[in-house]
Length: 148
Image (cartoon, rainbow, N blue to C red; front, side, top):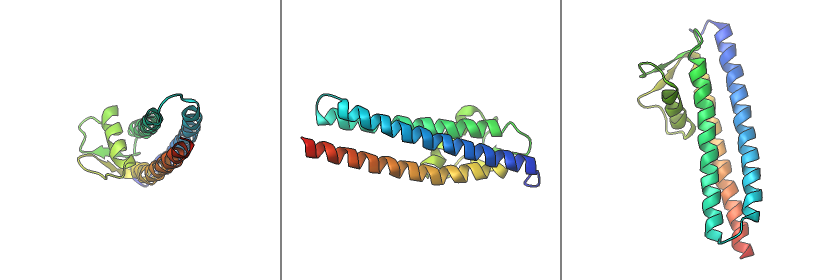
């Protein structure tokens, strides 16, 4: 399975592209949220909730990006498989992506073969993006508390 360098290269390129897209989505999403939070009228509470829900939506979108990438890669010969899934549906891939992105770890579904590179990279990037979101929310909320 690992001797097929075309499949390995495909997984590495797809991983790099998906990672770049997720970082771009996250950056632009946080930038948009930051602008909206300062313009949003109303109570501090509403701004906090808007920020938290916005960050959650960003993470769900990123999980789906990695999940769809995984699901597409599973259709290529020798790119790998998903152990524990009978037919590897897109929802199975998104579920595996969610457990990987959140660094929960593998449970009933596990990547097999070259796609492990994608899931390993997703785990590291998920950790970084989640902490980036936490820092963003902390800094934004700190500003709101000072302004009020």
